[in-house]
Amino acid sequence: MHLTQELELFPEYTVTQLLFKDVKNATELRKMAVNGEIKGALINPSMVVDAFQILVAANKAVHLHKNGKMKTRSLYSEIIFNLSPTNNISEAFKRFGISDSDSAVHIVLIHNKDETLNIEDIIGKVDGQQMAVDRVSDLTDVAKIKKLYKVAPQEEKCGSLLDAVVCRMATKDVA
Image 1 (tube, rainbow, N blue to C red):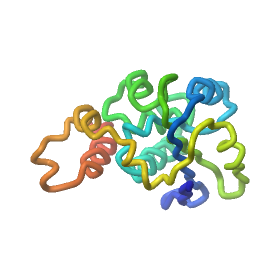
Image 2: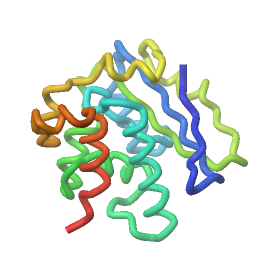
Image 3: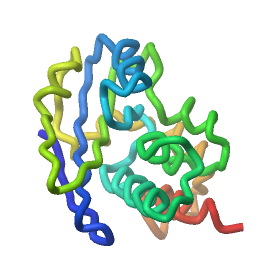
Image 4: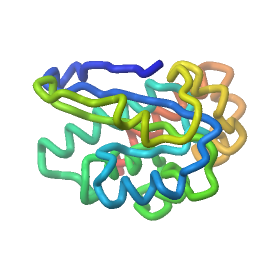
């Protein structure tokens, strides 16, 4: 149900993704994340095309963290910021973070290989139904994503929506 992957460039780190639908306690989860009770990024899955998109954002966050170049205060907020095509931090949180009214949540955890991660503890905090991470596209709002990332119809003829999104995420820092 969850997806755990090693970061190629940082093999000492792993990224674990969990996906939930029919969530009834989004307000409490958001408060727990703000207070540090959940050490993870809580993402609105309607803005996620594929788990690879999250992996790209997490990889970039770890890279910036290790180089002391993060634009936000924590590794997890940096993941949310890296999903955005713009450099506006508050806008990124509005669009990609969860809100109190959300009924689905995509949780992203980054941990050292040496650390033991208690996934069951995090699953227990979510009042919702866990689903396989590779089914995130079931919750995707394609129209909203195309509008936010400004994906043109011609672009979709030669590549996928995921390609367009990841390309914009990767190049937003290039001026």
